[in-house]
Length: 443
Image 1 (cartoon, rainbow, N blue to C red):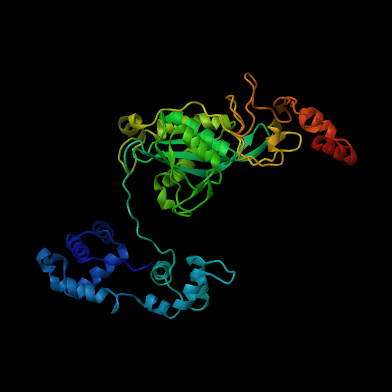
Image 2: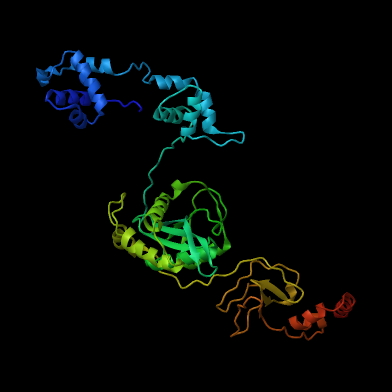
């Protein structure tokens, strides 16, 4: 057992309780020390001349000084013999703690075993303090408390891996991830369960969170999720086009946390352990839909109504009183576009999500910027052909959206004027016939 400093007040309480006729077990309980420690102090006091019938006035400062000098080990540098023994092996312990040359860092338990093989037997607590103070083991940085900010402004997001759950669609067990939303001021949280961490899953979680909270927070602080952050940077992170489009639709801003900096989003980091231990552990779910329904109820009735250790209040009540009125309104349902780079082929078509879309013929061979696929009657891009009125711009996989171009009046040639259907037929001709058609079109 490691050495524990016992104060003068505790020594005096041990001697006072002993003079009252209590046994060593009761004496130790009253002073808050170990029974063996209480015995050593009582024996030293008896050697110094203290008796049980001497009264409280007999416990003088001189007696206490004599007792302390007799019991406590000599520590000229404030350290014991085990610490002095470790000083001779400091470089070796430092190398074990740091690792290197392809070797991983060792734990304190393993270092204790290796030192014992060399004849260096020291208490574990002494070795742990030595490794922390002198060898760089788990050096703690200064924690700076950050204010919560204004109500309804900031919401922190993070993914957490929960466990395996049976997926009826695939017939196998799949890993479940939890996208956790934590309101910074009230600590009210919402959890969205998903099998993947794609942009579609993140946006679906956001849409469900806005319904749960009754509005949209002004700033989201996510982790460096691949669907959200393309290139992480402490000052100028690069966000994905799909996420920026959704942020513009919902009206919030994005302030990603730095890489490997959990202190940038501490409110949601602490919630990860709570979700794993209080909701997921020990539960059985029929499928993902059942788990999602139960976690929403858990967020509202259990996590939201507990007494939070930091704010000392119920998060759901604080949210309803302080933050709910400050949120942005819930936006219209979001129709997620598909952002991709495509090239216009010689048949006047581009391929997006395994579907074909016709474009003006002057863009053959070019790469228009990020065509979009929407269901609201918009064009794929400003430079691409606008769909005729009443025509669905979205085509299913393997389908085709567009119309046959009109035949030009200036006789540009059969290949350009024939439209996609005839062009497809001409491209299946032998090379010599295609070359003849191109010459006829040019002449």
